[in-house]
Amino acid sequence: MAEVNKKLTKEELEEDQFLIHLMNAVSYVQDRLGIFLGGLGVLIVAVLSINFYQQSRQDAELDAASLLGEALIADQNGQTEEMIRMVKLLVETDSYAGTAEAGKGQVFLANRLYAQGQYAEAQSHYTAYLSNYGDIDVLVYAASNGLAACFEAQGQLLKAAEKYREYAQKNPNKMEAAASLFEAARCYGLNGQTDIQLEILGQITSDFPKSPVAALARQQKEML
Image 1 (cartoon, rainbow, N blue to C red):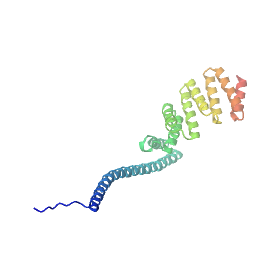
Image 2: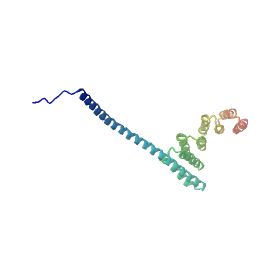
Image 3: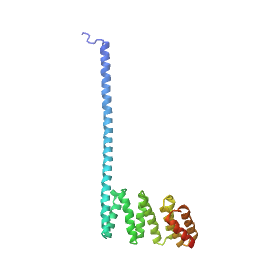
Image 4: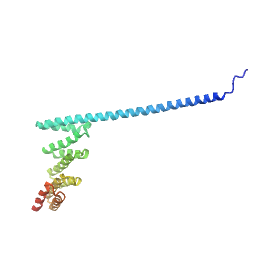
């Protein structure tokens, strides 16, 4: 039988090696392509999720603003119960939680409940604003003092005084701190703690000499 095998030339060996490397490269690319496509799929899902979340938050902000606007109109028209119903819907709906309007709604609702003598419920909404929002200075002041006023209205003078004083301690550079300190001094006085009352009145005149409250503090101090 004739010999069919023959010795491969150098050129043929080099060609075979090239084909082997090429096949390995193709196989590597195919393997990596699967990983790449899988990662790309995850990335696409993540981007879509972020876009959906952002759109949802924008929709929630708009809906919350619309609902609060309707509540304010109802309040102006004397529809107090309808206003309270709408603001409660605003602050209790999960999709509105964290929106700026829900934060405003907490304070707005608390003020109306306080005016109706519903101090415990008003207190919970003031606390909710301070705990979950607290990013607008004027509302922080309103909620802090509203919370103190709730304690005062319920006869808890010492607790009220401490809450008024707490706002001033947290915001020592704000002019509103002087007014809070004056309220704290008044509550301490009503609670029979004249020594602390005098101490705080003196603090007002020394720390806030240009505040309109300072003149009242000096007059009050002279009367004691």
